[in-house]
Image (cartoon, rainbow, N blue to C red):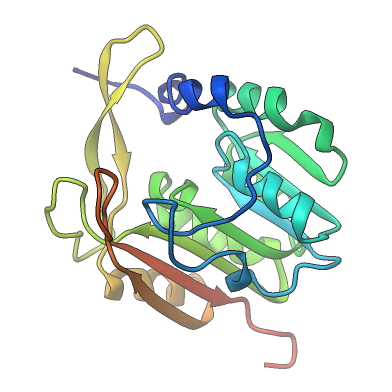
Length: 233
């Protein structure tokens, strides 16, 4: 089994759904099941805000926000060529309020200091990029007082406990040609997330556990929010 970059491993993800469901979602969910729990209200009032979805995939969450929550702009950022192409096919007409960005998330954040009011991720880049690199870049891309909100697994899908420190594990994946491969995922315990967020300069850190619920896509998750300190803090 080979290790290849995460950019190569999203070719198959979401493709079946994209063929049968091209609508802008009418709801926004943070839970792993995507059927219950908190919604977009967690992000606050987005009217007039500049927002980015980190690891946006097919940009379904970003499309919902662009259509239903009146931001100035939502940047849906993803490094995968396959996911960017899918998002463009589904939601390209929503430009310019929805901007689909094909770029590494960390590179994008570093290139846009102080631009965003809100950054968020729904089991996206915060799961698949080293948080010791991504979180400082996110803090720098936020305006003073800006917010980062993300959902992430509270335990491995196998049922194994989350990591007690900032360590990735290998998980199965599939290359574009169908070959078996592995990719890295960060599944951390609450105290590990709190520590790495604090080290990146975030304050007001709040962690809520979202219950697993029932069904084949049941898994407990953390919903984590934090802020870049305001200029007067």
